[in-house]
Length: 147
Ligand code: ZN
Image 1 (cartoon, rainbow, N blue to C red):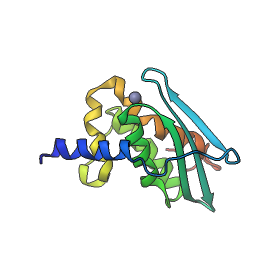
Image 2: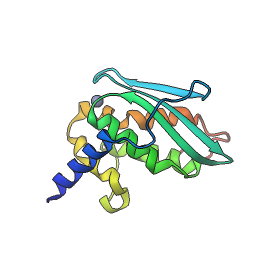
Image 3: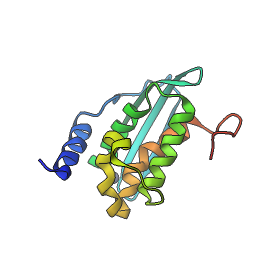
């Protein structure tokens, strides 16, 4: 199996069996975000304790790339400090827009999405959940971790 096939398998696995996916209870403060060019929508809720993200849930529908990226995002930020999650979201979006480089072995499973960079219209599919995450986190309280 070559790398392209492996990445394809990771995307299919996450889009068919998305992690942290299911109805977000009405009681939870959720944010919604959409990508009109593809029809992807996501509703996302975060639970935090102190300055850590303890849980993430999302529901939504869209193309395989948007759902796989949302699933990978939830795994990447669960248990992480809020500042680290914010930094990861900013880095991922910049990477997908081709503004920064990022070594595969540092990206982990997110590297499976690297091929999407060749398709500018699909980049918004891949970054949808990450923008929802940024929206859910809100602006930094003291402004210091926003680069
Ligand atoms: Zn899409």
